[in-house]
Structure formats: C-alpha cells, structure tokens
Length: 207
Image 1 (spheres, rainbow, N blue to C red):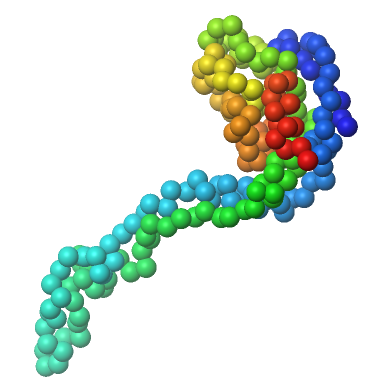
Image 2: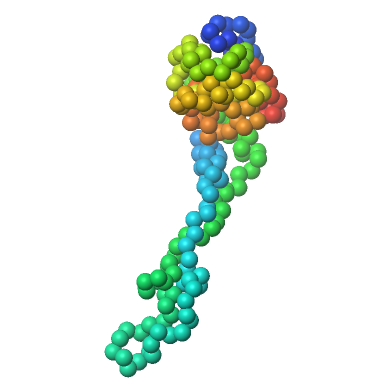
C-alpha cells in the first residue's frame, strides 16, 4: 500500500492518504494501454463522411450511344465514375469506427495509467480544489505553486468556479471522477486528484 501526502492549494502538506495497491500499484503493460487508447480515439471519430456512388447519382440509365460503329470508345451510363458528373468510385460512406474492448480490460488499463503516474511522481492529491471565486489569476497562482503547466484535474463533484477559472488556461483539463479515462491520464504530464475523488476511484476500481 502506497502513502501519499495530501496538499492544499498553497502546496502545504495537510494530511496523508493511503492508496490501494490493487488500484495505484499494479504492473504496467504497454500493449493494454495502447489497445484502450486506440479504441478510445477510434470511438471519437464521427464516421459521417459520405459521397455519391454511381448508384446514387441521378442520371438516365440509357446507354449514351451504341456499342459499335461510331468509332468511339464503348460507354455505359452517365453516372459512371469515369465521366464528369458521375459517381465517385470507392468513396467514403457512413460507418462506425468503434472498437470493442472488454470492461475488464478498460478497468485494468485505468489502474495501469494511475499506477504509472504514481511511479513517475506525477500525481498530487489535493485536499480541496474548489476556488472561492471565478478568477483565472487565482487558478494560475495555484498551478504555479506546483510548477505545473500541463495537468489533468479530477474533482469529486462539479466545481463551476474551478472549471470556469481554468477554461482559458491552455493544456489544463478539469473533469469529475466519473469521466476519468486512460487517454487523458496519459496525455497530461501531471494528475491532480481531490482527496474525496481518490476514495471514489478506489471504490470503483478496487477488487
């Protein structure tokens, strides 16, 4: 079991928290992380690109001229992809890019991503990340205390002041613990977890 310090926004230690080994200290397997990240990004693709093929183009189905005797090349319908105004050959059509990943594999990858942050000393536990007012300057000051520029902040409940204060700060993302995912954990250099969010995460991912 790993023990981490719990800080306030002034980076002053206020307490400690015990992290479950089956959530924050598991062996890391890169191929599982890769599989889950690829599936997650594939699921974000809209798959709505579409063109008209020769069947969808509105045109006469009559043969433009007879097969033989004109001295010209053979020809079919006006909707042929080889003709101007004809359909597109092998063009995109609506499709789903979703890749199925078992729930157990997703949960396992989340544990690995969290364990990686702990092992690399890239995770901070904050007692309370709520701000008294909506002010970007206050948020930036708090981030400067930890000397962090690219961070993912995971809160226990919705914090409107925090979300709006960080909105204009580049390379920072705020989310609630329900939305925690492998891609965002790995994308951002530093992970901030609220103390109460740690309990919820351990409850959800613990064995």
